[in-house]
Image: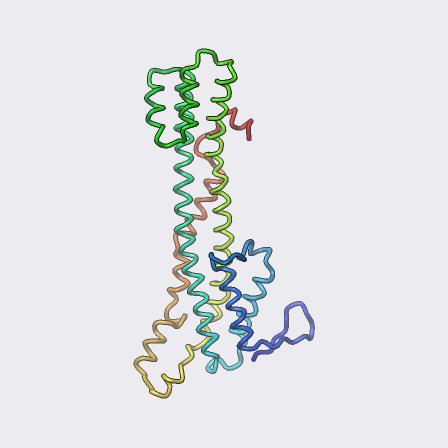
Length: 274
């Protein structure tokens, strides 16, 4: 067991047992499990999650005899970082998919606006443009564009409703609200996963890889050295390095740019609707 002072409380010692730390590691893993109903939402506002990480970090860094460090805790902590790293990389894939969806939506919005302008002006190619667009939009948008293109009187309610429907769909595509929500959710999870990597993975560096009793008894020196080469953080930093080198860093920066600047301005009517 390990004694340490709880931050902010004077002269109060907490006893942290091996079982308690294993329980805390399990709780953290459940927090970051995408299939768990109760997940980390906002890292900055989740003091309980941070306290769990802090207790794990403290146990790892302040354990008095590192050579006798509990193998079960080392294995669980290492597994937690590895799991967090894998989840982080999954987030990368999800972010990249959402970015492509957002770009496609913005491109589609631009095309719909162009076709709407063709239909309003009754250009020679407006029917062909609507036909080309039909496979990428819903039937109600196609019908609305046809109404606009065939209308002889722009003052009728039917015409105005059709234009309004198309403009509203363009605004929705440009706003990408559902994609924004998904991106924020993934970013919050990524912050939590990064927090684990920074706090837990770094703390593991100072702990020698615990040897299993069976290995000690059999004295498999070659196996021991290979195991250390494959698992020890000081020798193999690639586990957390995978996060540092992840394309998600560039993806998040790209997301920020997309949020601030939309490639094409919305129609005046669309802005008024928003």
